[in-house]
Length: 430
Image (tube, rainbow, N blue to C red; front, side, top):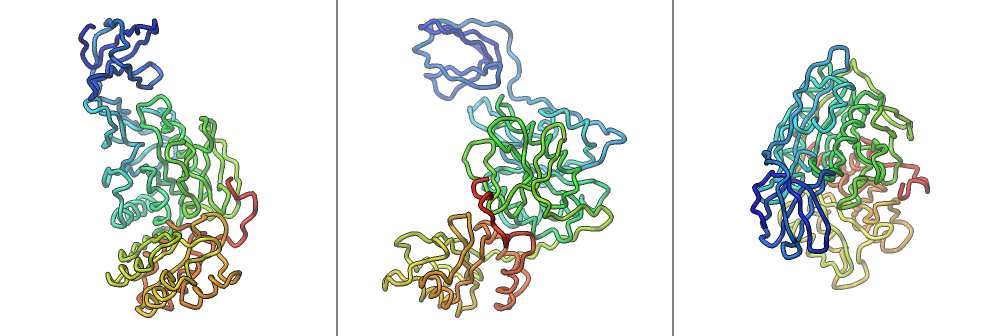
């Protein structure tokens, strides 16, 4: 078999008579031959199954992804971008075969040159470039501060590119930290790395740019609404959740409907009319006070209540419990009852709240005795809020007050549409 250099276009013929053409990519597996097909996909072929290979054309540099030099377009509405990392800011590292991040923002937009005809990108900020699982509250604060500065300029809105794994946490944080929101804040993503033929980056970026020009002054997640490349949804930042590890329409509304349906050509239809309207002349306020000593705990059958003792001992100030059913934890099992630990936490001044681990539906502690007992023990029930949103909210609330009763009152207030008082059947698995 002919020896090839990375970047060469080659033809492979297998012993079974199959013929493949593509760009040769180095592999860390010495038994596998990898090429990139014209459709953007990589395939690996067992060397033992290869009959012959031949060079079609000379090599090209593999580790350079094209970059779009964005030109200012007079007459188009101005927006700004905050790039934070994630798959939407990634490419394949051909020396390892894995995905690496830290792509320059201009390279992202080379995948959707049409956006240069939709908006004028005034500024691209890159406060950090990390995988979203490495996000923490300090990153949320930084994003909120940068977003507020950009919103209070002449921009029509701000786009934030972000990894998918914790995108819904960041969306919730911005929903609480940006007060009196005056313009659209859109977070978008990609489930497939940007150099793949099946990447969702292009459609998500185009739809996001159009969403920034809409009348919806909300924090929204914008991305694929279905498996194909036909249209996107704009989802409320406190009512969206990642629901699939790899599908492009991974983000779904929970206990809510999408705010808007939007396609790459900019056709927008409103699904919900319950949203804050654009107020360009006003200024957004940034409110980033946040308590980090908080926890999100999932109750499960047989769960030991000493889980709570750990956080009590570490002097945590707030705990969110993902409870079963309508809001239940063990109460009748003498050895495993969570009631003593809940009472102990409350006595120590720790705010302890229940959220539905079912995600859909709302809690009601009054239906069963288990719920009534937990309610009497001091467990605060947070209706239909999503667990991740509750985690962010309790940190934000406790960042604003050390008064236990005031914190309970604030947790039940509806700041960013995190509660939906009317949940209709058609919201389930929308």
